[in-house]
Amino acid sequence: MYGTHSKRDMDIEYQSQVPILRPSIHARRAKITVKFQDLYGFTVEGNVDDVNVLNEVREKVREKGKVWWALEASKGANWYLQTHVSSTLKTSLKFSALVNAITLKKLIRKGIPPVLRPKIWFSLSGAAKKKSTAPDSYYEDLTKAVQDKVTPATKQIDHDLPRTFPGHPWLDTAEGHAALRRVLVAYSFRDSDVGYCQGLNYVAALLLLVMKTEEEAFWMIAVLLENVLVSDCYNKNLSGCHVEQRVFKDLLTKKCPRIVAHLDALEFDVSLVCTEWFLCLFAKSLPSETTLRVWDVLFNEGANLLFHVAMAIFKMNEEELLTVHHVGDVIHIIQRCTHQLFDPDDLLTVAFDQIGFMTTTTISRQRKKQEPAVMAELDQRLRRLNSIKADDEQ
Amino acid sequence: MATSRNKNMNAKLVLLGDVGAGKSSLVLRFVKGQFIEFQESTIGAAFFSQTVALNDATVKFEIWDTAGQERYHSLAPMYYRGAAAAIIVYDITNQESFERAKKWVQELQAQGNSNMVMALTGNKADLLDARKVAAEEAQTYAQENGLFFMETSAKTAANVNDVFSEIAKRLPRLQPAQNPSGMVLMDGPAQTPATASCCS
Image 1 (cartoon, rainbow over the protein chains, first blue to last red):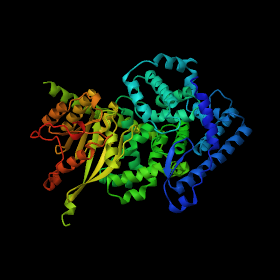
Image 2 (image 1 turned 135 degrees about the vertical axis):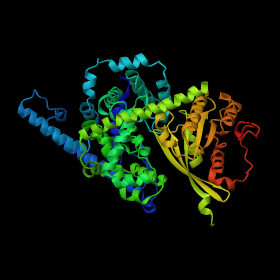
Image 3 (image 1 turned 180 degrees about the vertical axis):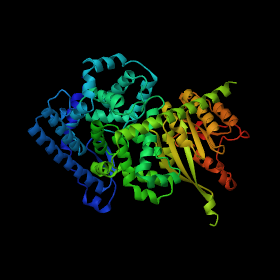
Image 4 (image 1 turned 90 degrees about the vertical axis):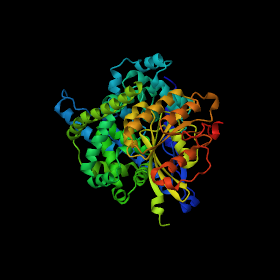
C-alpha cells in the first residue's frame, strides 16, 4: 500500500544471502573488537567469538527451517494456524488441534524461522483476528485522516524518528522514518489514553523489520497493547509498568533470594535495569535475533514470558553479581550479558528450564495485590507536586 | 596517601529535564568526549560512570541519565533517591523546557536530600540565534533557589566538564579540598552574572 512491500521482500532476500562472516586470521589472533551487521541489519560490536556464535546461530536458524518445512509437508500448510481448541469441534479434531498446539509450543520455543515469522506472529498473537473485525480499509483510512494533524504525541514521535536505532540501513532512511511515523501516529489516534509512549518506537521499528507490511506492524502494536501485554503499561503514568516492576521484584525474591538480598544491601533496585526491558520488550537491550526469539514466545504464550526472560538474565549472572559491591558493577555485568547474548538458546534455556514454573494465577494474584499500592504511590506523588504549585501561587 | 580514602568518593548524580534538552548528549560528552546529532532516545534511564580528578582527590560519578517524556517522570524518584547531586537541564532555545526545569527543581527541593548539590544547565548554548531563554533569567532563578547555573553546549563541549567539576567541588565531603581553579562560573550571588564562555 505504501510501497513497503518491495522493501520487505528485499529484506528477506537479503537475509538469505548474508554471507558467513569470516574474521581475518589477524583478527582471530588479536582478539580485537569487530563491527558487523546482524541478520536484521543492525551493526553489532563484538569479538571474534561473538562472530562465530552469530554464524552458528544462522546455521541453527537454517536447520530449524527444515523442521518447519517438513511439518508443513506432513500436516499441511498453515497447520499451525489450526491450534485453537474450539468446543464445537469433534473430539478427534479437538485432539489433533491439541497435539498441534503442543508441538507448536515446543517448536516456537526453539524459534520460528525468520521467513515464517510475519505469518505466524500475525495469526497467533490475535492480530489477524483483530484486523478482521475492522473494515478492510481501517489502517489506510486512519493514516490518511490523521497525517496532517499535530498533537503532543505526533511532536514527540517526530522528535524520536531519527533517534530510533540511528544508523540502521533501512530504519534510518526517509522511507523508514515515514513508515515508522505512520504506524506510531496512527496508533496514537487509535488509543488516545496511550497516545505515544517512548519505547514504542523501538518495538514498532522492529515489528516493521519483521512484518511484511506496515499495516501488519500496526495491528501487531494494537494486539500487543490491547491484548498481549498487561493493560496500562504505556499510559500517561505508566501505571501498568510500575505494577509489573513490583510483581517482578516479588517473583525474583522468591526465585533468586540470594541475588535480591545482595542487591538490596547495595541499595540497588532491580527496576533500574528492568524498566527498559519491559517497555521496549528487550528490543533495546538484546541482539535482534535474540529479541525476536523472545517475541516468538511472547506472541504464543503471553506477557508472563517477560518475567521468565528478565529473571533468566539475573540468574545467568548470579555468581558474578554476588561478588560485586558497587551499583556500577551490577549494571556493567547485566549490560555486558544482554548485549552479548547472541545465542538466543543460551537465554531461553535458562528462562524455561531453570526458573521453574510460575502459574498464571500466581502472577495475576500478585498483580492484583500490587495495583492499589502503585496507584496510591502515583497519587501521592501527584498530590505532593500539586501542593508545591499551590504554595507557589500563594 | 593516608587520607586517600577520604579523598576518593563515589557520588550518585541524576540528570533531569525535558525531552530533547540534551541530557544524554551532555553525559556522552562528559563520559566519552563525543557528540552524536541523533542520540537513541533514553527509556527509563541509562547509567554511566566517570571519574573527576580534583586536586589530590577524585570523585567517581555514578550517573543516571533519565528519560525526558512526561509520563516517565513517575519513575524519577527511583533515580534521584539518595543522589548526592542533580543536573537539571533545559534547552536555551525552548522556553517550555525551562519551565519544566523549574518544576524539577521544586520536586527535588521537596523530596530530595537537602544536601543535594543542584546545577541548572542551559544546554544548546551554541544555538545562539535560536535562543529563547535569557541567561540572566536563568541565573536569577538559580540564585534565588540556591543552585549554580551554567550554559553548556554538548555539541561544542563548552562548559560540560566544568559543570561536573563544579559539582565535584561542592560535594560536602570535599569542601575542604576546594581550590579556586580560575574557571568562569556563574555561581553564588556575589558573582556578576557574566555569561560563561560559550555564549559571550
